Length: 369
Ligand SMILES: Nc1ncnc2c1ncn2[C@@H]1O[C@H](COP(=O)(O)OP(=O)(O)O)[C@@H](O)[C@H]1O
Ligand SMILES: [Mg+2]
Image (cartoon, rainbow, N blue to C red; front, side, top):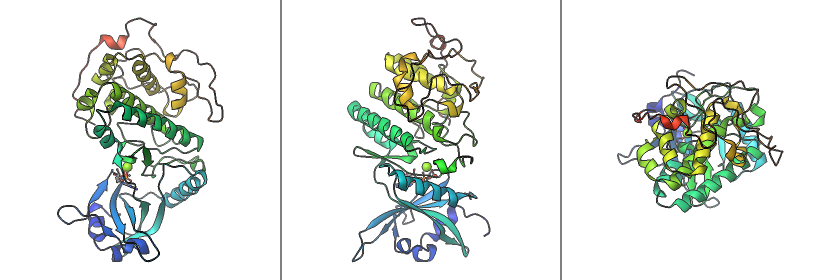
């Protein structure tokens, strides 16, 4: 097969679709071009994606495809995509777009390399959508409600996306669509390892390839929920904490619980709900990545979350053994969670007392991540 193609090679061959692709639909596409007349790629790190329009014929409509070329090989890729495709067809969610894993995808140096041919999802990436609606808290709140529904639908359908982050979430009108199914988990993939661990600014800091299951989205789900809720109340968070490649948290914040500027600023909003959500997220950082509670359970038990006591700046979050859970996480089939006990986080503050994390101020340069 030779070396795996790099971006430049993909870029070169896709300029001649009839030669590059085996799929008849893709052979006929015109690629979207940039202002220099070159194919316009989108890339998130694992793949380079081209937008191609297939002209309509006498019996067919015009179609727009995302042509996803992989930047690295994954040995069981075809099997994984087959399992994902089968499961998604069965559960019929409104959040995924049709796709096909094509083993004979793109031809480079006389060898075939796989691609994913995917329906193009129109809309704005999550961060662009948020930016456009910053001055419209009602619309952010509506998106947050949609988010809760999407998350509970995914949980009920036993699907985890694996990399929920702005680059994989498209918003159009009132609907949300997810793209990039490389890291997706469905029950047939039980026992395998993850092929990726998701975007740093959205994932549990201790998540590793071994953590792969229904639970892998829960941290990012809560982070996105909290970010939306906070932005509804304080738009200045965006200007201050959005880097272009996150929402309002960066990885470093998970190692600086309560101390980095975002936590302090969230506290300044003066909202009990935001304080509880922030406490819940901080509590989950201290859980094992596979023991993070579902959003549903967090929201039902919000009042029980107390911010964990201050942790020395250089100490990474403690990884709690996966056999214990701070908040009872009901299986998806149980509608009402059992009455929760107060969150058993060491040193949790007494009600009404000045939280330890508020006593320290540690502003940092946020240009990283
Ligand atoms: N089906 C699609 N519809 C619209 N845009 C897409 C689609 N698939 C990918 N993209 C765009 O391409 C970017 C990179 O694709 P993605 O599949 O997320 O690759 P990576 O695995 O590298 O993150 C996405 O952030 C998105 O902007
Ligand atoms: Mg992506």
